[in-house]
Image 1 (cartoon, one colour):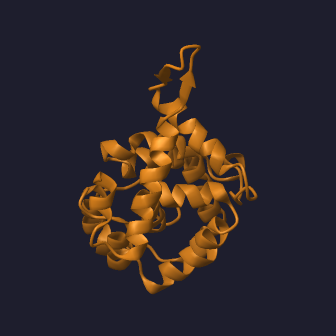
Image 2 (cartoon, one colour):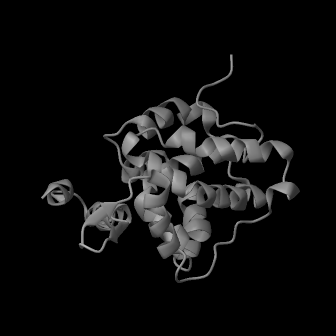
Length: 207
């Protein structure tokens, strides 16, 4: 019933995203073991709860193109990549799934950095304050981020680089379905940090 209420009145693409979370997340959380008496024992460890989901995502489709490995990128990029999840996964309901997909999120980050974000310009001064507010606001969703903050050039970049891979990689596709807002927020932070020139995600302008 809760899932039905969450989907009510939403555009089809939002309904699909909510439906995926309503189906996939409970399945992942139900990593159950049945004993001799058919009693159900639930494993409540967050990392283990989502391991099933992540392994399922890897079951079909090819691996995503992650670009260069960290040892071929500037030293500070690895430190930056490690800050992505903590920066965009501020809502308690998404922290566990973000932890599981942290490596995949960093894969997308490395892909962006390797290609220099196709030379997309930083819009940090223009949008950072509102972007951070919306990314941290639990009442906004991924479509709000997409429609409000992405430029036409950034939408084209996303479709050509991430969406094209998600059509082939179940790992990217599942991440996009379960943490779409966090993924989009990460993408814009990376662009606004000049793809990248810093060792941590900037959420406010340096004084």
